[in-house]
Image (tube, rainbow over all chains, first blue to last red; front, side, top):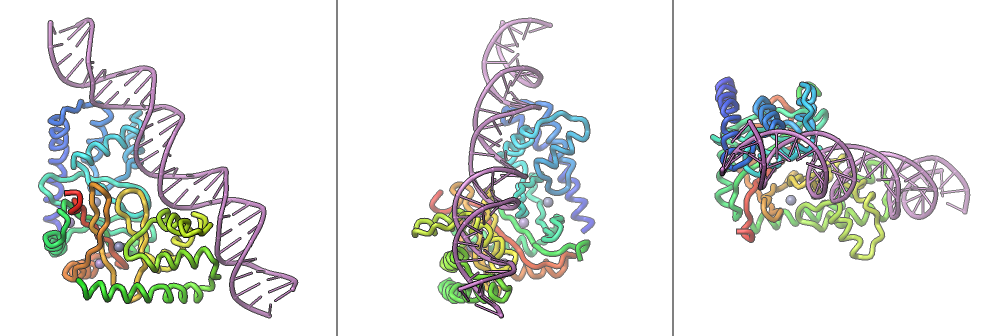
Length: 153
Length: 153
DNA sequence: GGACTTACTGATAACGATTCCCATTATGTG
DNA sequence: CACATAATGGGAATCGTTATCAGTAAGTCC
Ligand SMILES: [Mn+2]
Ligand SMILES: [Mn+2]
Ligand SMILES: [Zn+2]
Ligand SMILES: [Zn+2]
């Protein structure tokens, strides 16, 4: 687990320049709001909602508008630079998509809504095998385990 | 696949009396709206949204209110009689939860939104192993494979 | 550096799914 | 049949998200 976290951290560190470059290559301009949102995304280890990101930025004195957060997340999502996580509470959350493909899935507490990350190679392998046999051209997958977190028990 | 569909059909057939009994045991009354919604749910093989269910019932001449659909789905979900499926388009869909535990997961087309069902024993086994090693007391899981359906390709 | 094109930004209105509220109706119990 | 109260339908309210628009600023070309 420690090794994975370490690798994960490296990937996280690499995401900001990766995303910045991809945006520049796409011909977008670098405004203050978008830069701040990118930095905020780069700093988070798991998913966060648009409103959470907005609140965090406002708390640091920024006058950024909520529309810019939604717009930027939509842009990044369209470019595959963030992954959308749907925990079932009607709020979309986002986390950086690491270019190497390393990712994690989520444990969602049905009582308090807490979200925790996990990774499992055997599970990924099983997903891969399913993806090969179905008619869809599979490009991604979402997995969420639901249950009661240790704090709620 | 044919065998699974067959088994699935049996389970579907058994769901309506199962749910009806569970509701009665819980002390609820049997109103016309709820009965119609239950029958509609029992007839569907995969997930449907509240509005889809409402439209279908209205199309058959029913004067049922949309609030009753949402209320009933919420009630059934709270009792574990329906499973909530979140395909990421901001609309909650529901399908009967079969008492035997048999279930399926979903392929979601990122282009047209089409939803298809699949089942994979190896995947279930992998999920089961993960559930045993994490700190959460896992009670359920959601899996969605995203990609392009054959019609969109 | 200055003019220029146009992407970016923030405020706010609009939207759609879902939830809340309330007066009316209907169920089940005795 | 009378009663207590759950169920119901309509519509208002809520909330996350999206669309609109006028002002601002990034990048480009002299
Ligand atoms: Mn995975
Ligand atoms: Mn499963
Ligand atoms: Zn995460
Ligand atoms: Zn389904």
